[in-house]
Image 1: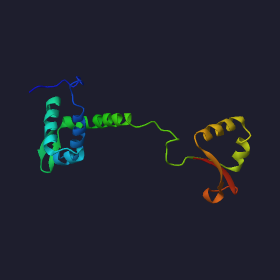
Image 2: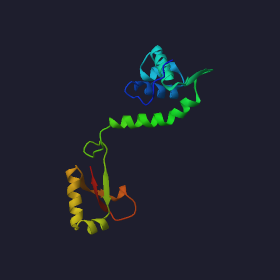
Image 3: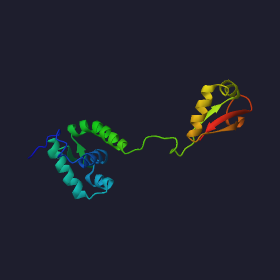
Image 4: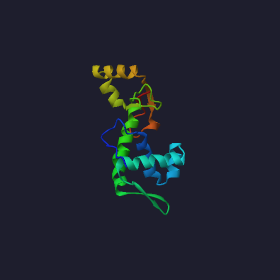
Length: 155
């Protein structure tokens, strides 16, 4: 048996890590294959390669599928964290311009009179307008305890 050094990432197939994660979640080669949109023989082959790479059986047959070994259980949390971090690489950074949901800031009358004359607030309001926010009256029925109108700044 050839053991691949886990530090040699150049020759390790990173797709095997997704297969390992699916196997840990599903506890079945067939269900893991379905989850990965692969055939059952393909996932069985991936499991064989994982066993070589980690020099551990990783899973043994059980009554209801496969049971992870102690080594597989030790890998589960760091593997999930690594996959989540890799997934985040492909997510665009948050931007209010691209966000589909509304964002808002509610200013009650006392805040309007306190903040609106303030130059800092005007600079803040200009910045909000640049990002597509608008200022509108906000009826009392939508907020608790106060006067009849407030100003909402929303996108």
